[in-house]
Length: 397
Image (cartoon, rainbow, N blue to C red):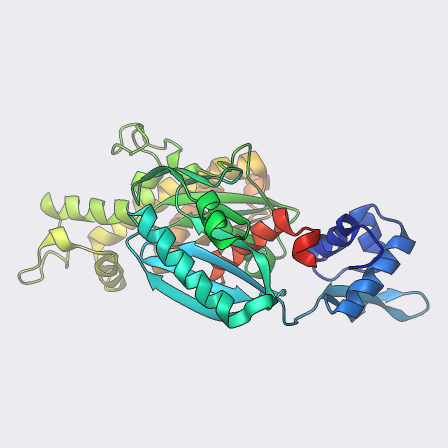
């Protein structure tokens, strides 16, 4: 890139990636590099089109002159990420500022790691053919379950039947790109932290609730992964010792109390036990085929059974959030996934219980809101995480 060491140029780019527009003096603070080195590197990156200058009218510098900030440029370089959803791959290409350029959806049997890998390779090849050398040669993937971010192995993903599945290394071998894998909820949270609902919160806590439950903690806009990528597995925190059995071997874990699967199961059980519900009043409706959209429709019409189940699930979630708030004292909590977006009543109950059960001076200052980003957020978060660990000299060049 220049006469400077790639590691120094990378440090500057990484600081701008993580923190947005920065002045040269702030870059020196973040990177530990001298002002002279920062000036040389930034001039080189400006010439190459990696970054651009922005006048910050809100921050005076010198005698009434606005400070000049450096930010990533929206140029022709492309980064590619993907998420394995319950239906298949959701892949997307982005520019360096996180703006989506194109999306690819690929249905696949998510229970088969072999089928998932084959479909992924085909879809990524399509994107690489479209963008060619503009692609940064690194791939980020969001996967379900307990994902070892160091080895690329899905240790356990009960909701799709994966255990001990080596995924990152085989994909990397076939593509010829370094491939970084991370839990899909934590990937979505990273995207929200940098581009969505959590951009002003530090620390930020993301809790994703769909067919599974997982969380992510983000400190200074970076994901705290723990020793092996397992930090945030709150779905397996025991909440009710007398609750349903969990695939992990415990009983009453948060996942079997508040996930979409758990909510559907509880409504189905209650209807079979004779609880009144407009769902049960349908002609020839087999409760065995109950789905999430049935709960959404029933709740919208004020179904008392569904609302009771949602309030109970929200209370369990609120208990878990109270413990997290007391432990990590986040500035903000972002709730994402299909369940929070489908059921505001559950979110309201969870927020109320969290504020009742957490330490009041902490909980009262914690903002709770829904995720803002659309369906491709997992892909954006996954490639953001990959670049956090693999934005090296060769990738930059």
